Structures are given as C-alpha cells and as structure tokens.
Length: 467
Image 1 (spheres, helix red, strand yellow):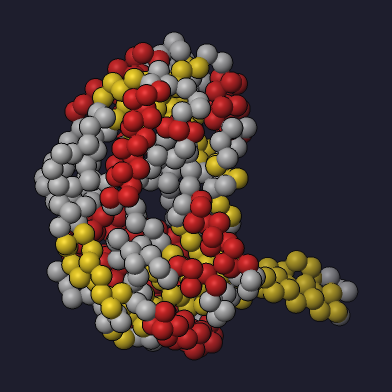
Image 2 (spheres, helix red, strand yellow):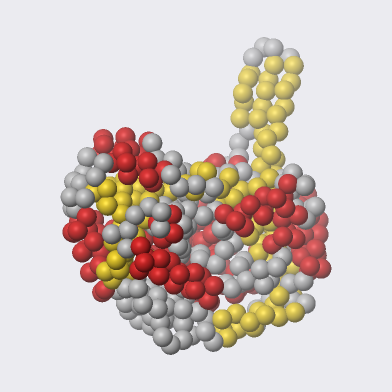
C-alpha cells in the first residue's frame, strides 16, 4: 500500500520522518506514513498564505468548478479509497464506501452555494451592504472516526469562501486523506490545499500559528479546550465540534419491536464511534423490559469482524487507547447494572468489542454520565417524561438528542426543551450537508454545514455609504 506523500505547495513530498499506521482489525502495520515536522508545517502555512490572495480573487464560479472536480476525483477513486479507509479505521467496507461517496456529495453541495451581498438599507439617505470576505489560511483538524466525511464538513466550505487550507488528519487514520491529496493536487493552484500528517503532535502548533486565521476542529471536549486556548493569543476564529453524550427518550407509546432496530442502529453505527451516536437511552417503565429484550436480541445477532470480510456489520475500535477506555466502561456497566448482551472483548488480535447492552443502571454511573464512544449502550428506566428530560439535560454536553413517541405533539413539546444543538423526533443521528449542525454547552462553538456553516469561514464586511 502506498507510497503516501504529504501535499505542500502543490507538490507531493516525503515527511521529515516516518511513522507506522496500524490496521485495528489485525494490529499489524498497514503502511509507513510520512510524518511532517514543525518546519514542514511552517512550509505548508507559508504556501497557503502566499496562495491566498490569488485564490480569494478568483470568481466564485471558478472555485465552484474546482470543488466539483475534486468531488469527481474522490468519487472516481471510491473503491481504492474505501479499502484504505477500512484498513486504517476499521469500519466495514460498505460503510467506508458510503463515507467516500458522502464526502464527494458534500463537496458537490457546497459547490451549489453562493455568498451574495446583502443590502440592509437602500434609502435616499444611505446604502448599506453586508458583504462577506474570506479569512485567510484555515487550519482544519479532523479526527479518526470519520476521516473523510468530517474533512468534507470543512474543506469545501473553506475553499468556496476563498480561503486556503492546511489540513491535518488524525495520526492513526492519515492514509485515505493523503490519498485524496494525491488525487486532487493538480485541481487547485499550488498552496491552496496543503495536507500534512503527524503523530498527534502538531495540533498545538497549528492552533497557535500566527499565520493561521481560523481553526476548524472536530474532536473531544478536552482537546477542544486546548485548541481554544491556543487560538486565543492571536484571536483566531474557531469552530469546535466536540464531544456529546446523546440521550434518547422513549415514551410509553413506542412499539419496542418496531423501534429497537432504529435505536440499535443509532447507537452502534461505526461501532459506537460517532459523535452523535445515541449513548444513553431513557425508556418508559411500561416498555422497559420489552425494549431491553429487543435490543439484546439485535446485539446477540450482530456480526463483528474485519471490515474487509463479507457480512461484517461492525468492525473493531479504531485504536488501542479507545479500546481500553471502552473496556473500562463495560466494567462500570457490569458493576452498576446488568449486562444482557455482549460485554466481551476479543481474545486474539484486533480491537474488537461486541455490541453491549446494559440494563438496570441509573444516572451517576460513568457509563451513563460520560461519553463512552464505543459499542456499549446503557438503558435507564423512567416513569415521568419530565423527569427523563431533566436527567437528559443535566449533562454538561449537548450535541444531539432524540424524542420517540407516536404522539408528535407531545414529542415536539419535549424536543423544544431539550438542551442540545440538534433534536430529532422518531429518528436519531441524521445529518445532511444542507442542515446546520452545532453543539450546545460543552459540545462546541460555531456551526458546520448549511449556509450558516459556509459563512463561518468568512468575515463580515459592512459598507455604509451616504447619499
């Protein structure tokens, strides 16, 4: 596999050193990856800064055309990209293929948008226009759970707005992103998009770099705090999409047999390694036993294995640190509740954990109160929906949540009072490129996706003219 190169100033280059990337299904070395030095990061930023004036001056139609060409290149290489993604991230091949196509679709969506001048006042006394200008160099930092789709949350919007980009994937999943860099390097002027890889040691340098004007970061809340602190000295703009502990509230009129597969999918997609996965479920006492039984049956039937093997539904955890963390949460569930499905980790190679269902557990357990980011789902019983909403809202994070009921008016009323950036009704974890996505509380700052997300990569510029 490979060779893989960094993309700096339009050229594919070796790193100043190398690092190994592991396959989480086998724990074997998948590839040797270039590792950028601080000097190479500085070169990438300098190239982006030098390319910015000409790129910003291009008509938006030309920038749209570049995004569409990039989408075509990504989609055209979908089989190769998906195999790389499966082997470095762990997800099943069909899911990896969907992620590649999704990334291309996000590029195409942003290519449909415009950034028009808004006329605020056009009176005999004055004309006031609100215009939007690009910011400059954008530092985009992407995590390991969805390397390509989360890259596509950031890069096309930044480029369409007229910015240049330095992109850094996670140290454990850099390969598919570096392959995309190779595919698109001739579709943009040199320096407009630069892609570096590191061993998770250059993020701080990016956040405090004086020539980077905005940081767009997706990752944990604790790392997000460090990003914010690093950006403060230069008053960088920041967009932070951080951790979540999404709650689902299932009212007593829900059909357990019909609803359980939807809950299971929302909780265990990508082996639970999804920022907006359902991570705790509050179930009305009248359907609690039935829902526990239905979810346990689904967990027991799940096919866990190497993502390249046909029929695999759930791959491994992406890295050893996360694997060990999730095993700790399983022990919390064993201590504080009752495991009715799963609970086993792999004995051989690979970071495999079966989908695990924990019942008879309550708030106060780490498994309920913290974000497990893995295939372990606690089910908490309630009798009063208002109490369930209070408990769901008690978390310091608020990325997403959902209400489930056959009474849409009752569900809507609860949804309006759920303290999260997104609330779904009778579904969970649905995202689309045209729907703004933002977190509440400790789940982040700013907005991604949609027109609102595009404008986050711009500076307001008001022209107020007397007549």
